[in-house]
Image 1 (cartoon, rainbow, N blue to C red):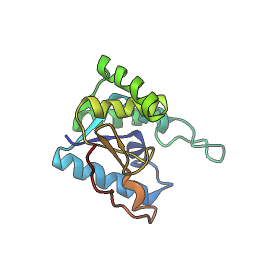
Image 2 (image 1 turned 135 degrees about the horizontal axis):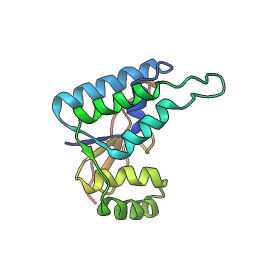
Image 3 (image 1 turned 135 degrees about the vertical axis):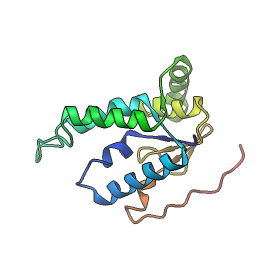
Image 4 (image 1 turned 90 degrees about the horizontal axis):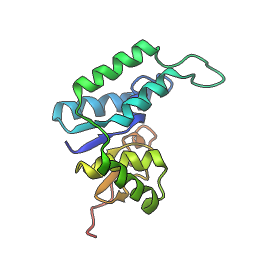
Length: 158
């Protein structure tokens, strides 16, 4: 396992409003599954169900998925990928990360899953692309979909 998947990757998989990002999410998950290099934090599964079952906004009150479909998708994800669950070390690391990196509580918790479990990157659009947070690098797989350069800066020591 080398990468942690953030909620946004899972949500884009089911969001037809962003076809480019949907395609990227499908590719990232398919390739990561084949390589056995992805893990899901418990938090992303909980957030996925919440995000896909609520209204998309005032212009469209329909959710992306029904509750039963969202739960079924969550079960499928849990069957396909290793799921990381919270423990004391994750909670303590998240508290330190929220302070050290000025992350929101939820982002700090996500980062802590990767840090504590020795994963080298988080696949997300919510962190600064290419930045290191402790031993974890943020990688935004959707930059290609936004016609932006998708190259990570070289690794550095220290």
